[in-house]
Every structure is written in structure tokens, then in C-alpha cells.
Length: 430
Image (cartoon, rainbow, N blue to C red):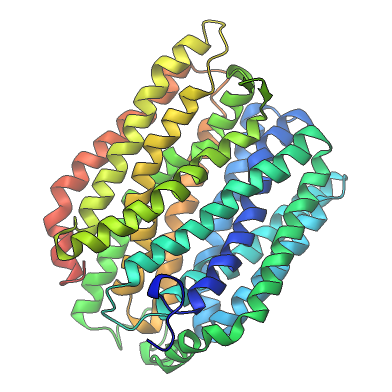
């Protein structure tokens, strides 16, 4: 295959892998200590910090839906990623200034930039493959490793600088990471030519007609878009639990976990990296598993049900950990390691699978928009995760964690019931 690169995948996959890796380095590096910065350096109360955190991370994902529309209709996907990355870098460098107005201005710039970059880099990945290419799910799993390599390194490097040296040095470090990603993206543009050409060849937005018109969509298209909405609803509940790593569980690590292991001083922000470390270790296993199983692998709705089951079980494990911690004993960091391991089994059943299935289900003329709709589930989930953090100092921890466990396990049961109906909506797409 002339265009074959990593593991037999298109050469452009490596370019997008590193672009997303550096963007996630910047995003997760800063997010790893954001709520700690607000409660410690800015003196925000837990509910105030949780609300700002939830509004910020929720808005980051909400902006993705607008970024998808802008790329579909005006800028194109390549230029949207380039402009978005530039604005993100500017936002992180703005946060390096100490005055409070710079804090809010920097967060706002990151929201705008990530909205442009996030849905469109994933759309470019999907467009590296022809329709029906069996490599697509495995390609997204490799791409997902890039996301998590950045998410692993970011909190360790930026978190150490922020908590151990100076908060604003951590913000600046995140900006440097995004800048490196932009340089690599521009240099690798030639490898993306096949994806850009496929996107250019699809039906234009005019084929859809005016907003709200049904022109250009078949009945099958509407069914498949309905399936995307169902996936969105259940993914929202999953992310509401999973994303508490940066909010509730970040404060939990800072206040209730023994920040030392084998004589090594730990930082609370480092625990955010544990999730990413497990994804790096497990992604090749899952990619191999789905390829090996081929048509015998679980359907996408079944994978979503498994994801909700695993994240629910992780919060069941947190209930005794919370009870011990509130008894006045700082718990071992290994509790959180175990929790994040279970969560990652779920995330790998949902996130790369969700990205892949949306690029397969979405009508070609609105693929960016539908990717934005799917990312809206992250917005809802992150808002819920920030809201949850506001209760950490007023609600017994076993109760706080138990509510999350109950909601996600209940959602898993409902998803099991809906597997067959959703498969019918998908119209043969796995």
C-alpha cells in the first residue's frame, strides 16, 4: 500500500497522532492542577472552584459543536485545526500572567481554540480511510494512544512545575507544548493530502439546504443521526463520572491520599496521569482485540454498556476508600491506581469506539457537526464533574461516590436493553 505508514495505517496518522499528543499535553497538563490552583492560590471555595472548573471544561467541549460547523461551512478542517491550536497556545501563555483578568481571559481563549481543533482533528483521522476500511477502528485506537501520551506527560511535567515551583510556570509549560504541536502539524501537511481531498470531495453544506431543512437527508440518514444522539446521552453519564478525576478526585487526592510512595514525593495533579498511563498500556491490547475479533466483536452499543459498567464499579470501589479517608487516615495512593485501572477498561470501550462510529454514522455533509454533537457529551459530563466537586467538603464521601456508582450502573442496565433498538437505527453500521 503506497500510503502505508505506522502498522500499515496511512502516513497521515502519525502527523495527527503527534498534533493531538501535544494539544492534550497542554490541555491535561493545565487541567491537572487547575482546581488546586483555584482553591489554594486564588482562595476559591470548593463550590466556586467546582463551578468555574465545570464551566471551563464543559465549555471546551461545547465549543466543539461550533468548531465542527465552522470547519464544515467555512474554514475547512485543516485550517480550523491550525487556527485552533494557535489560539490555544495564546490562551496558555495568557494564563502565565498573575492578574485575575488574565486567568479568565486565558481560559476563554483555550475554550475557543479547542472548539476549533478538537472535532476537526478527529474528522481528519476518519478521512484518512475510505468508507468500509476495516483499519478505521484500530486507527482510532492508535490515535487515542497519542491523546493519552500527551495526557500522561502533561500533568507530570506541568503539574510538577506548577505545584513544586510556581503555578504560572505550569501554565507557560502548557503553552510551549501546544506550540510544538503546531510546528509538527504544519511540517506534516503533505501527509494529510488524501484526507483533505476526501473531505473536499464530499457533498457541500448547500446540499443540506437551509438550517432545519430535511433536504439532502434520507430516512436512513435520520435514523443514523438518531443513533448518534442516543450514544451522546449515555456518553454524557459516563463522562460525568470519569471526568471527576480532574475535579472531585483531584481534591480527594490532595486532602485524603498519602502523597508519598516508595519514598517518592507525589503531587495531587500527577494522579490525573494514571488514567492516561493505563490507556497507553491497554490501547494496543484493545486495538488487537477488535481487529482479531473482527465481525465477532461486541457491537458499539454493547461496548457503551460495558463502559458504563466499568466506571460504575470504579466508584463502588471508591466508597470504602472514602469511608477510611474520612476516618482520619490518609489512604494509600494505590486505591486511586486501582480505581483508574477499572475506569480505563470502560473508557477504551467508549471513547475511541465513539469517535469511530460517529465518523461512520454521520452523513458526509455534516460529519464535523455530528462529531461536535458527540463531543457535547463531554461538555455535559465535565459540567456534572465540576458540580460534583462542590460537594466534597459537605457530603460524606461514601454517599458522594455511591450516587455516581448508582447512576452509571443503572445507565449500563438501560443500555443493555437498548442494544438491539440502537443497532436497528444504525442500519448495518457496527
